[in-house]
Amino acid sequence: MFENIVMEIGLLLGFAAFVSLLINVLKFFGVVKDGTADKWVGGFNLLGVLALFAVRIFIPDFDPLPIDSVLGTIAAVGSFVLSYVVTIWGSKITYKAVKGLPVIGKSNSA
Picture 1 (spheres, rainbow, N blue to C red):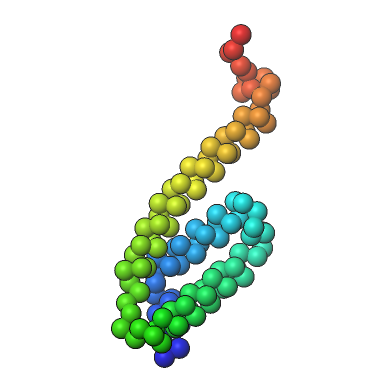
Picture 2 (cartoon, rainbow, N blue to C red):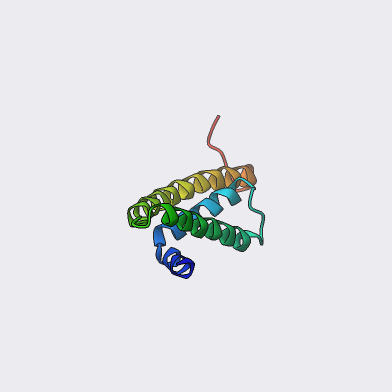
């Protein structure tokens, strides 16, 4: 049973996308440090396998696909939001970096 659950969790693409988004959000806030993302992915996947295993013990007919679909939607929307936030944040940093430089850092304010 456990081997089947490990294989099944690998097929849940919404869960995988959600884990990826979650790790990127945690990177943005400095929780996940450079070079440790693979350990975080492994940990979240292990938690997913254990959670699915525990649910299957008590509810053998449980179908994770509807939840996986919701997680996939959250991951898609969250990716757009995170991309937007990073773009705005990056633009502010770039503006401060080039402020006062000839041509590209010129201001037209009085």
